[in-house]
Length: 162
Image (tube, rainbow, N blue to C red):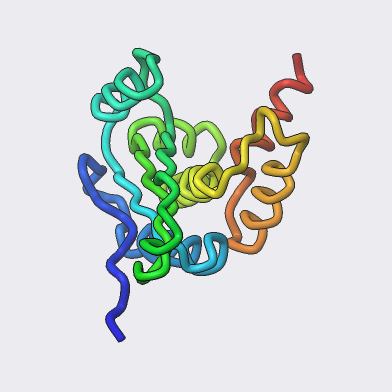
């Protein structure tokens, strides 16, 4: 049986990025969190993420992670594909580096947090509307994956301070 290709595509990334660690974590997310369903994650810079954000969301600014769910496939077609495609992610390594510094952990850990967050969105979760379901899932998975505090937790903590 063929081994699936790595879900991570490395675009504009820092030279010191530990690519193997990022690939291994993405593969764990695919296997454990996504139940083997495929996704692709482009690691790139602010410029490309800003262009994608403007084109698909109408926001002319960079962001840390964008999620693009795959369209639902007709039942007959879905049954012949090797793994259901969840969709695609785009992560700004520049945003990730800033956030890693702010929160006192590695760039690889921050990218892992962003991959997890994005995959949960690809799986249909939405922290703005799901009454804490995504927050609970993100917290459970990041602990299992040994990742630092997640995006939804950070946002909730930040809102509590206001």
